[in-house]
Length: 284
Image: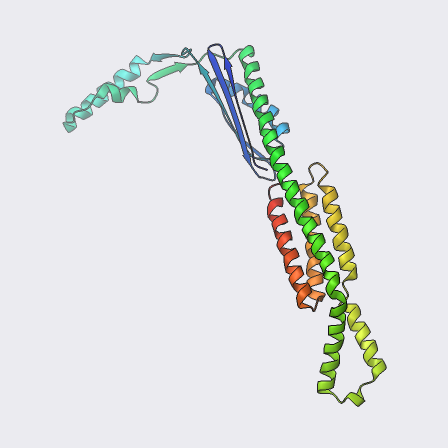
């Protein structure tokens, strides 16, 4: 599930910012961007975040600013002199005009930067900042989850309402099937040669094969179970399984319908189900 949280902690001479965002993913894939002075704390930070985030392709970014530059830099003179000598020779050979000092200063290992270690008091402030950002992140997720839950309930309720509409066409469906079969028999066979009892037996057998009463009952139960499962924690996979069962019953009703009006209702139910499946990708 997607989420976003950010907190900025303003302290005397310091400013700590932590930002966390995530996209949907079945497992937790956490990437951290932190200043060099906090590298030794990365594992600890991951141990704090992992149980809180649980899942998702997440990215956390920590920034640490101070009013005074506490890092010190020294110039490695021997390396700088070597670079200068080589650059001057190249410039002379190629008859080039360039600021060799500026170029040399950008070369590797010329500057040695030393950053002071972070004390435990500062780290405590960092952890507090992270926790506040995660709290906002969870608030974002909860809001999105509520929107998804409301949408799921609406879609399933629509499927249940459409299922009830099927009943209005069931009696006329059976009558139409009987009449169609009788018309076809009269068209291709002599009416007098038809055994009425045998016809009724075959008709009864055929109507049993296209009866979808059981599918209707199971579909209603699956819909109710889906709604009950929404109240459970970490039920994404279970909702996916229930959705598959709902789709199976809808498809069976459609294959047995033999009625254009019921087929239209089945198409509408499938449309609602597809929207549920799309949204489920955010919670699986």
